Length: 224
Length: 243
Image (cartoon, rainbow over all chains, first blue to last red; front, side, top):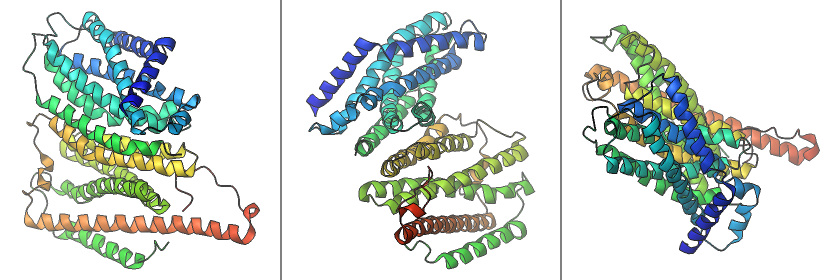
């Protein structure tokens, strides 16, 4: 299981490094969205809950782009058949894909969050880096788990690009609620306010519930 | 398959229960002290919402059973439960909107967590039919739909918790009347309305199951009699077409 997972992760990361299909697109999308928000809201700097909302909506929509591409190579190049013929646990595919999506999200955020701070965040806002990091990591786990499940559900349908966002966005509303609520005080204009830890607990609970759920049902998406 | 068993008794029971509930609503339950007559929409709206949510969760439970047994009938049960719950959910959103307009002066109120969570759940389940429709292979359609039903069924309570937590607790809880604070005569009326709505749901569910399975059986009988050529090919559909 461990070897299969690491082999699959290496395969996907190498594929991404050679083709640059997902991460640059997600990143460009995030930057364009920041520019759109700047003019759509007609504000040159944001703070507090508005900043948190812009950041999380952008990251979530960028993640949806990644989900849309997550299983495309498997479907179009026969990767599913190859994987099913290999004598490994089917859960390995789920774990590896979730880890890969998580890595993609981290890579995007590594650039997009600093860009957000430079482009949109008002002066004085945005301290408490460790707390922000904790929110980002927990939210990424949730997005990666749910995104992988939804991508696997949607990739075999005819209207893949439509079905995946339609399913993913309502499922991820709790993640946006929790992360935006947790991030808003960190981005407040007059320095950070008290950090609401309970939202981290909500995110962790969400991750755990959907992680177990996806682990339980993913095998059925591969049967053929 | 004998989905139609007990349908007559169920139909009569739901007719009696719903008539009785409406009689109580109009002639027995007192007018609400704050909202007056308008509050009576509560006896339609809240039972409908509870039954719809239970129907969604039931769809998930039948989804689990389908994945475990591979029985197509369980997929049909799950599909019909979610389908009827979706119809009820539209009713819930409309009656909720009317009530909000009458009680709070606005068609939509974002700081009422129950409303918002229900909308999110509705949006999620609105993808159920398109998902089924866009998968052609019937076995895969049933399996994928079951996976969706399970995930969405588990999402329902989690979503309600998250949205409720997002509320600052200063908002007056008008819906708090659903809790223990309801006076006795209102509670009896409400419970009867809930029972009537639940009974109506089960009746409709069984009717739809009986109708769908009769269509499927009729088709297979026709095929046995006249051969494959006599039948028009199956159209693509989001509903299960085989048992």
